[in-house]
Image (tube, rainbow, N blue to C red; front, side, top):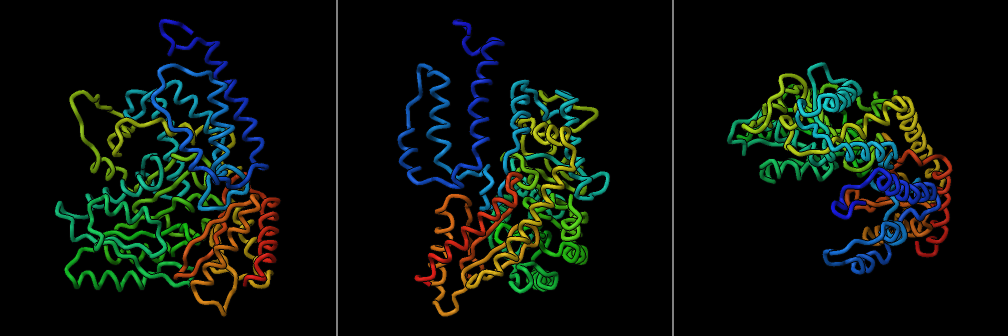
Length: 474
């Protein structure tokens, strides 16, 4: 290390830095199956102990790794482990971490095609792979984003610009009461009043799905009130229960009413790679915009989202703004002209590298496995006296609870929360809960590429054991 330029590492120093970190990373990843699925007790105290002023002098790298791997990382939810069945996990493919190391090390700018044509084309290839997976036609395009929230916001602003006048405050957006809260947030950030966001009621007996007849009635009523219906969201896998709206049916309704059809496939969109998933998601190819999160059902690290738009030029019409200091590309994709971001990371490599290394086959097989495991878990739960499945898996998520017919609603919810806590206390799996029509339900979401039958066996074993402990209480 140069004393005059300490930030400019030599080749030997770079190799030592990476090798030292890699030793700790390999040990950590290898031990994921034995680590607790969630261990956050005392986390706030730990966080307070880590508060510190700006360091003037440096510290040895091994000491910093000790802080991370011995103190900070263990006191957290193990989102990368096989027992993480909470929320919608991704897994964090190590291939993508290597891609990020390459991307961050070469530090090329891909927002403008002319700045790094080959790398920009690699990212454009990734977008086109996604387009083909979903079934959107030639001429569709899109961008990679940090995740579903930014993707949805970009889509809503694009739809607003394409379908509404400059004074857009009469525009109305429709989504189901099961839709992800980021969609409502996107509508508000796109400038729409909260009163213009319609949360349409779904039926538990119909899998918590939004029906076209419900949409028809809402659109007709809003038109009578002098409002301008313009966008409907179809969920391709909700967070609550994994519900998939009848996309084809909603696409018909969108055509009847002249609505922009937005499909939220952040969780479930990539299941189109499977035969079963493609049938469940029929109609997604008719969308005007689709959100996908590779950091969910392609198992990539957090921070990898995607937006596809049927008319790629709509993105450019919405976001294009030039300046004298920006070069203009005569060919290729200028991603900064299609999104809110000017400075952006080279996200494409973290998708491209694992796809090129393995091909799509292993990803498809992993998704098929998750569908099978979720169905298996639902069937096993039905064999346990005192447990009921509230939401059958439409993809790889399901919801269940203790059956407590005689208890009051508040008491039922308390006991089910306690039931979930007893399951989680064993540390082998982590489940989360939600409210379905006011009733607390326990969710299982099978999505990590590291989760296999052996872990699901442990999950059901822990559910049965927790139930035995609960019997005196219930």
